[in-house]
Image 1: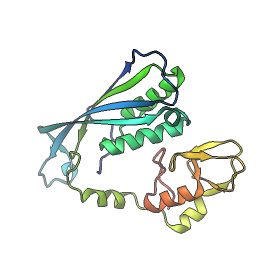
Image 2: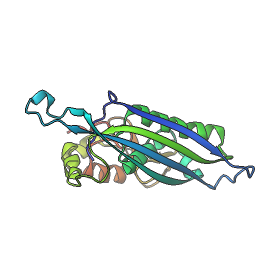
Image 3: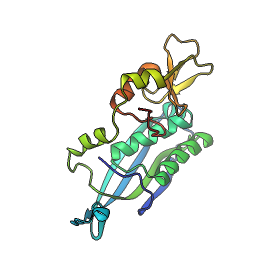
Length: 223
C-alpha cells in the first residue's frame, strides 16, 4: 500500500514487556510480539484545487483495529547488528501495512536493541499497541501495489553494475535480505550500496531488480 512517510500526522506507539513466572528461559526459545494496530482513515476531499487534491478530510474519519502476533527465534532476533534490527522492523511494518513513521520505526528498533542488551531471558511476550493515520485500510484497493512499484522503479542493470560495489568483507556481517551471515573468506561476493549498507551481491542484485531503494535505510539507488 502507498503510504507517505510523513511524521506530521498523529501516530502513537506503546510497548510493554510481559515477563514469565518460570525462571530463566533457554536462549533458543521463541519470543512473541503481539501487535494491536488502531488505524484511523481520513477520507480524501473531493476538491479540484491542485494544492488540496490529496489533503485528507479530518471531519470524516473511520477506524479499524487489527491484531497480529509475530514469533521470533531469539538467536535470530538478537544475532544481528543495528541494520538487522531495522530490517526486522521494516518487515513487521510491511506485514501490518503500517506506514514507516520514524517514531514507530525507532521505538521498535530500540526495543529490540534493549531486549538484546538486557538478555530478556525472562521476557515471554512483547505487547505493542500502535495508532496510525492512514489513507487506506489494510486490504483495500489491491491495485495500489502496482502504484508502489511504479513510484520506486527498479534499478537498471547498468546502474547496478556501476554503483553496487563488489568487495570482500574483513569482518563477518549479516545480509538483511536473505537473513544469513556474510562470512569472511567466503566465495560468495558481497555488494555495497552507495549508502554503505552491505549485502550478498546476488541478494542485492535481486533486490534492486524489484525495488530501487535500500532495504535498510530506504535510500534511493542512483539511476
